[in-house]
Image 1: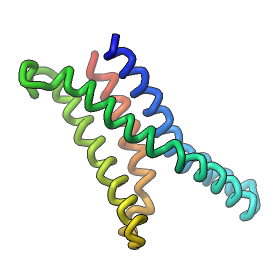
Image 2 (image 1 turned 30 degrees about the vertical axis):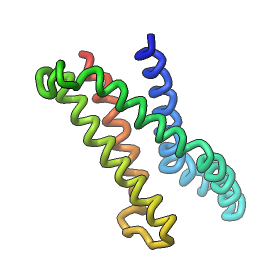
Image 3 (image 1 turned 90 degrees about the vertical axis):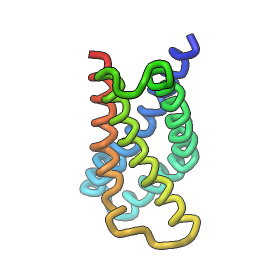
Length: 143
């Protein structure tokens, strides 16, 4: 029962995470075409303000619940590369850690008041693609 509860929490956090990134990459730029600059900035500020409150907790919970579920399928008894499920899970783990590394880097730049690498302008696009890949891998793990 605890695994099921953790899985549900993990899925809800993944929806929040990918949903915010989707909105940032797909929806908000489309709104820029129909709103004037001030209206668009007001919408972005409203969404970003709310996201700054929810997003960190959702990401942390996503990582913690993912780690809990990871330990069920990869551990000293189950092994690491014994099944296609474990291999796909390890690929998911690596992709998730790349995203986590980008988030940590972005936050550290913000706190240190340092300009991030220019490539980070495209980080949300990367996260959206990798996030969708992680979701697809999650479904393929149990096929």
